[in-house]
Amino acid sequence: MNIVFLDTRTVGTEPDLNQFDTLAASTGGTFTTYPDTSPEQTSKRLQGADVVITNKVRITRDVLATCPDLKLICVAATGTNNIDMAAAAERGIPVKNVVGYSTQSVAQVAFTLLLSLMNSPDYYDQYVKSGDYSRETIFTHLGRPFLELSGQQFGIIGLGAIGRQVAQIATAFGASVVYFSASGNTYDVPYQAVSLADLLSTSDVISIHAPLTEKTNNLLTYNELSQMKPSAILLLFSRGGMVNEADLARALDEGKLAGAGVDVFEQEPPAANHPYLTMAHPERIILSPHIAWSSVEARRTLMDRVADNIRESQV
Image 1 (cartoon, rainbow, N blue to C red):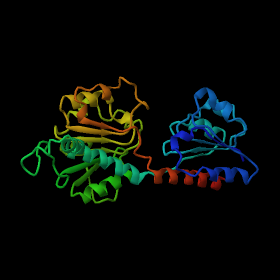
Image 2: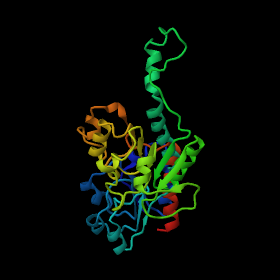
Image 3: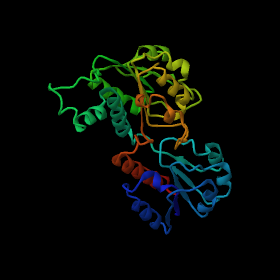
Image 4: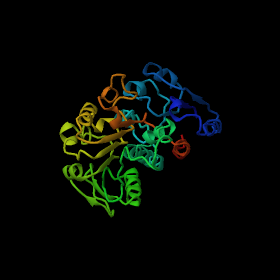
């Protein structure tokens, strides 16, 4: 069994990739890795491969047509939008992804960005380190007031595993959780289901954790963002395409909402002139480079489960 991993840089150095050497060698095969793979290189690198592992490299119909030996596609992620699923099905090639590996990681980063927006730790840290605090005549500094999460309404769009973990943490802070089911599914949970319009207009914090689909693409535009409370905070940790990025930048600059924490972009990496990077009020948005999924523990779990997918497929 010959295994090829097309983009190992996307999982870093912490996961144990030696287990794939062992897997391949146990059948007299090889394990080949590439840090990155361009579209032009994909077909050539998959020649003779029985199994391909890819995080974001696209496996298209044209690629599959040039890889007669391929028997299994393993996606080192949850989303499979980089795979031509119809073409794989036509060729009888199973596609195995991994779900649930990053729940704790994403929730932790979501609250990191939220609390940074609410509590302004960078501002207060700089206030002390600059010497301003040392020159004070009282024991405290109230230059940038903050509110408690307790008693606020926390709206969640998408109540899958990550959404539920976020809801649990929000509840621990004393917030009241409501949710909008983008899929239309109902859940047996102790949280109230509301319409999108109600969630937008009444929530103090809105956190998005739904998958990107035809229904959720461009779900929040300027019109929807303008329905939010001027004091509200928006968190985006699913897919960038769910929120119109130019509209969010405009709404933030105009004060339609107070702040946003964003970990995902429609195009990754974003262009240097991206709307988020050219805002008049950049202090109203905190950005991270699609890292919420990637705690050391999450990446180790991810690759362990990819290895399990290969073993269970009996290629």
